[in-house]
Image 1 (cartoon, helix red, strand yellow):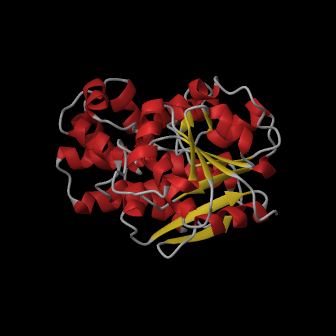
Image 2 (image 1 turned 90 degrees about the horizontal axis):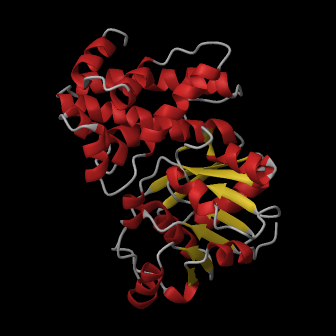
Amino acid sequence: MDKNLNFAVIGGGSWATAIVKMLSENLDKIYWYVRSPDTVAYIRKNKHNPNYLSSIEFHTEQLVLTSDMNEAVAAADIVIFAIPSAFLVSELEQLTVSMKDKIIFSAIKGIVPETGKIVGEHIHETYDIPFRNIGVITGPCHAEEVALERLSYLTIACADEEKAKYMAKRLQSDYIRTKVSKDILGTEYAAMLKNIYAIAAGIAHGLGYGDNFQSVLMSNAIREMKRFTKRIYKIDRNINDSAYLGDLLVTGYSTFSRNRMFGNMLGKGYTVKSAMMEMKMVAEGYYATKGVKKLKADMKKRVKTPIIDAVYEVLYEGGNAKKVFQKLTEKLD
């Protein structure tokens, strides 16, 4: 692959900001689309994002900042999407330039509500982009720790291993270790599922369950994830790898996890609506739970997912968190 391909990052949130930081360690120029013109102007002047990870100071001569997505996409050979999945369709509605010949990487750990599909599948079907030109950037990695330059690990998945290696090299640094995978669907589904399990972990914490129960919950969650990903996309994968188990653990236990925070609020008695209103960031697991429930309904063969079912009951059926989790405890081992 050409060593001088242009990169564009689409999104102005914490994960997009962290990705721009990682790329800036290795690239001289990065196109960065941020929706708000005021935020673009602020970053140009003050060298940091005023809304997310404000401690990161950018060398703005490296950045081609724009509030026009078409400008960023048109200039790029590789486009990284890092916006909440709930807003992906509405954001892409403004896109008039073709993505046909682009390499697309998704850093979105969620499901597209309008289609019920993971982002890679949505991009493939909607924009007719072959899977060999679609990749996934996944953890275990919190944006907040990237900002602090704490040692972190990324898994880059793509059906075309050379493209995965190319992206991995552009993201790695003294504080970022990378590995590559061909399991594009499995890693993306796992990145989506772990957000649901993090909500469950948060609910349990908010209800007062301790570390002993949390360990049982997480061990059941990884087995549940294994069953689900095997049913969706059967491939030889080690579910204990960091892209699966590691990402699950960091999202389920970390205080940086917005999905765990969301679940914790529900466990403490917040309604779903009030918890969503109070949070400043999107909890991807909320949308993922509904999407997975629909996927399960469409499956010809049933897959056992008691944790996902419990979270769905709390989020979408008005279930009392305390009663729902009392029932869940009888289904775990």
